[in-house]
Structure formats: C-alpha cells, structure tokens
Image (cartoon, rainbow, N blue to C red; front, top):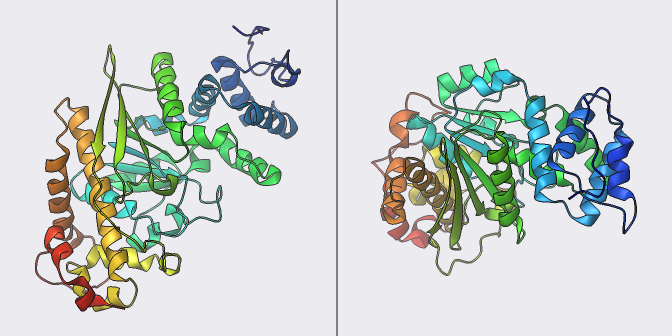
Amino acid sequence: MPKTVFELTHLEEFDFRLLIKALGKGEKGARSLTFAESSLLIQGFAKGKVTHAQMASAMMLMRVRGETAAEVAGVVSGLKHTIDESWQAIQVDIDWPVYAGKREQLPWLLLVAKVLATKGLRVMLHGDSLALPHRRHVESCIEALNISSAKTADEAEKTLQADGIVYVHAGDLAPVLDDCRLLHQELGLRSLIQTASRCMNPTNGAISLRSFFHPGLDNLHQSIAEILFAEGDYQPGMIAIFKGLQGETEINPRVTTDVRIIKKTSDTLQFSSFTLPTVLEGFSGAKVGQSELSAKSLAHLWHTILPFQSSILAHEMTCSMVEQALCSVEATLCLVLSLQQALSSRPVVVKDNLLLAQQWWSERLSFAASHPIKPMETSPKYSLVDALLDDKDEVCAV
C-alpha cells in the first residue's frame, strides 16, 4: 500500500507537486506511484498543468528506482485518454508499434505489413523516428514502398480503405509524446514513456504486437497488459510479446523466438505461448554492409520474383543479405499467421504457418500489379523454398 494516499481530484485542481514529493521524499519516505496517479501525471503534462521540470523530475525519479508495472500501465492509460476518440472508431486488425528502429538493417517488417494488406488485413504502424535518431526507423523507409502516413483519424481511415496499411507518427496520436521526447533528448536518458508509447494500441486493434530486447521486459509487458485489461483500457483482443530483432517488432530468423499471448475475451483473460523455430541455422555475416543499404532495396525486393537471379539486387545486396531479409519476412509473417489462429481459438500450427507465409509472399505480386511502386523486372512465379535452395553464390556473388 502507498505510504501516503492522495485524494486524486480533477487534474485542473490537483497539486502535482505531491506526486514529485512522493517519488523523491528520500530513501525511507519515497514510494512508487499508483496506476491512477501515473495516469493523472501524464494527463496533467498534456494539459500543461504539470511543468517540464516536474515531468522531467518524475520520469528520472522513476527511472533511477525502476518503474513498476502499475506506473507504466498508468501512463499508458493516461496517454489513451489524451488520444482523440475518433481514432478508436477505426477498425484495425494489426496494431504494429515500431519505436525501436534497427542499428544497421532495413525494416523488413514493412514487407510483411504490405503482404498482410494484400490479403485484406488492415495494418496500422505507429512510431517515433526521432526518439532514437541513431537507428534506422520505419518512418524513413515507408515512402520507398508507397506506404502513406496520416496525421488524423480521418486520413488514416481513408488510407486504410484504399491501401490496407498506414503509418502514424506517435505525436500525431498523442501530442504529449513529442514533449516527452524533447525531455529525453535534453536529459539524455530513457524513461517509462518509451515503454508506454509502444503499448497505446490507439485503435484497439484486435492483435497488438509488443517487442522487447532487454531481459525481464517480457514480464513487464505481460503485467502491463494484465493491468490494462483489468482496468478496461484495453478492449477484448490479443497482446503478443516477443524478443524482437534489435528490439524492433520483427522476428529474428537466426534464433528461436518464444511468443507470449495474453488474450481477453468478453469474460476471461487467457494466457498461452508458442515458439517460432530458427529459420537461419549457422548463419554469419549479417551485419556486413547492411548500414549502406538504401530504402529502395525494400522496393526492389518487393517487386523481384527471383531475388537471387536479380541483377538489380546483385548490385545492392549480397546473397547473405537477401537470404536474411527473406527469412525475416517469412518468420515475421509466420508470427502474424500464428496469432490469427490463436485469436480465433484454433490450435497454432507453426510448421503449416511457415509454409503459408512462403505462399503469401510468393502471391504478393498478383496484388502489387494493380498497386505499382515503380516499374521493375518480372519473371516466372517464385517460391521462397526453391530460391533458398538455389546456388546463390554462383548467381549473385558481389
């Protein structure tokens, strides 16, 4: 129980200095914030009732001590209360937060999102490319694949109707996040805001992805989801938690990935899991030359049916790069297909989903022909399995 319980009046009347005092009173007197207090804190900052100094102090005090699940969940709840209600009217199948970025590689997950859109699923990506400016973010690559961004719910809905996929900057969902990012940059430290922003699910998408990198964050994300389902901030649906490639919401095909599922129906909370196998056994050389790749390589890979025989790709990517990219697509697409099975209460059959992922990837160009990015080479129908068995070094050695 909190050492001091405050009467949480309306944010227009509350003295937010009390929360800073609770966090920083001293070794014996300090305590963590409750769910309701954390929610009120971020809403107060969004309304200008909490000063920049107060918010920075609160974030750093929580950071030094270590944020609790209740604190992070409270901030998520507060963020959701600052988001315009029109976003919740949008129907989204996959809520895809993309905040981590990748240190060298391109975001192959964008190819997966486009495949899903060709199959009639509605995908909303959201992130903040300025939060970690030293990384390669989704936002810098969407133009290469003709993925549109939206600033309003109305724009997002129109884009989803037309394309099935849209990207939204986090600050256009919850403007207070831009203010929080400026504090991060001024202080040079992370805070619970960077975890909370990933958990917003602003449109209450049926499937919402959660990736992590550092050990223990899987448990934190599960606790956050449990609290938000219990508090009613999350609608019935599914949260999927997994260790992403360099922290991004993309499966690393070089390792086995355990996926946790928290599923809420109208009256129960269910927990389950499944494992995605390693797709690239004994693979090496993943990082060599990756940072020099242009976002145009995403478009070239999307339009190329036989990538290991493509003269265009041969000038841009080594065979190892192509192999890793295709396996990342396959593994991440398998993840979503498995989650769809779990959402509909069917048994998750990963082996079958890997085969289906290959099929969906090979079928993408039947849709892409009517949604061109730019003229590209074409060739006979491509099978991912066949391509991976090709003599790649002879065909496209660089």
